[in-house]
Image (cartoon, rainbow, N blue to C red; front, side, top):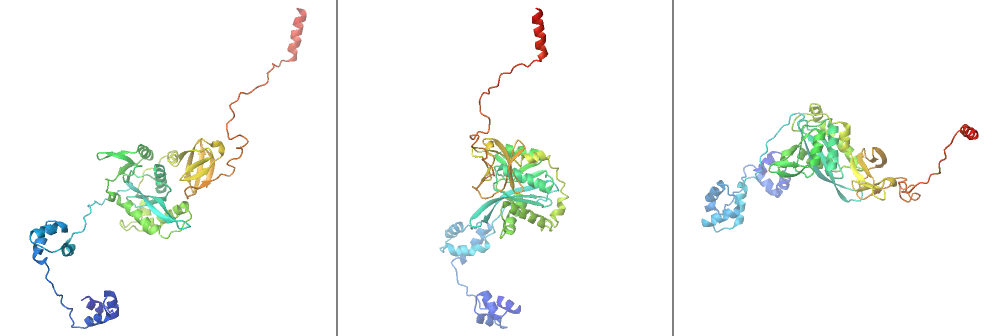
Length: 398
């Protein structure tokens, strides 16, 4: 019948034979009008007499062929399990997935965030992993994506601040999975928050929320977005470094947010203006989470994202603040900039600072004054000469 249907569609005997894996002569034979396909010879099977019992067992929800074989053997079946598996397979129901209620979020109410791990090859063909932070607003589906060197708490906070700034506001709730940077355990069904993340959420003004354990589909919007980035943005992408990659991915976000979303039927970039997000916190609060604290080593370096960046040797042992900003690593001491480097993304590198050790030899490696007493010249009281004249007259009259 399939040969006849293909012939009626205009396919040749050669094309039909190639498509069905048969010779063109066989295809041509059954293309002729009035030629019927051969009848199948039904060979008796040991299972035939037990099929009614088999269907009764399957109606009771038993599809495990080991169990079915045991029940059929009790009824006298002496065949093998292979023929049983072959017969049961078409009747076996698909694997059941837990049903999930679909939610459409009201404007400004929720954002979902997650981490993913992507891969890229360097200039010599070595494969590297790179974490990716993803946040999507539940109502508008506007998205923010950032590639990072780490996925620790400091990186999470920095990415979230960048996302809120990109969106122009803060949602009422942020939903995530049970990552250790967010919760440290559970008291029954109640999450025990990481205190640093809880403080961060209060500073930013959102309420944290986590999925039910082992139910990632609860945050399906961001789960799908992570896969979409891996399958659509990353393959074949050319980039110089993570800063360049982040520029490209934000451009990609803007392009896709300007198109009609396949689920909502609306344009995310337009819907973003209707989100009604909470106002951003003051700049000094957001800046607090863009900085990380480091101690300068004895040889004048700070470690950031696996790279050692040089600072003037005079700051060895001091506690400084470091941040990644517009592709540069900036190092400050008490709000005063002391070094600025172009960010590097190959772990283990050392980035020197021009003049890093200037004056080190002259001062013996000690930037502070020595712990010595100081000798001062004797101070003689200076008097007006008229005072000496007055004293002389007094002595003479005496």
